[in-house]
Image (cartoon, rainbow, N blue to C red; front, top):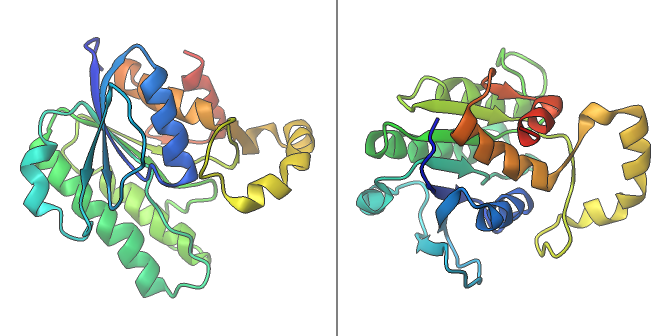
Length: 223
């Protein structure tokens, strides 16, 4: 936990979750600096924002020195398992994430690492759903790295904010379902802004669990 102004690395800002987390960080008074680690520019100019553009996330060793002295990493990068065999999904999800995290842990032993997995992730690593097993192993092994804190976020259905340009297309078609889901399954739906706020609060205040389901994300966001 820290009371100083935060310097934060974000991955995945060109995706829906990463974009929402980025916007919360840029608005938040506790955040002094945001660095986007990305393959391509997000295309936004802001006093708090800088970018490190690197084409190969499978090898970030050449830019390791640029990743020192940060308080947190909000790892929002990820791919869908649809149409992918386990070997490919494992490489893009587990291998890539662990490589980036290992570099960051060496460079920033006091860092808080927040990882976005998803509702239904399988901590046993033995379930029938391939994506859930791989995400579960990723969560488990991240907690073994020498970070100050590791938190695994498991959002369900996400309500995106206004002005987001990377909202997944199918979310727009299912917007009419939001009131229904809120009524029958409130612990399966979370606002994108709450994910960002919860990550910031995880750094500044900590949390009682390393795995945050939707209800935990909402609780931490409200602190």
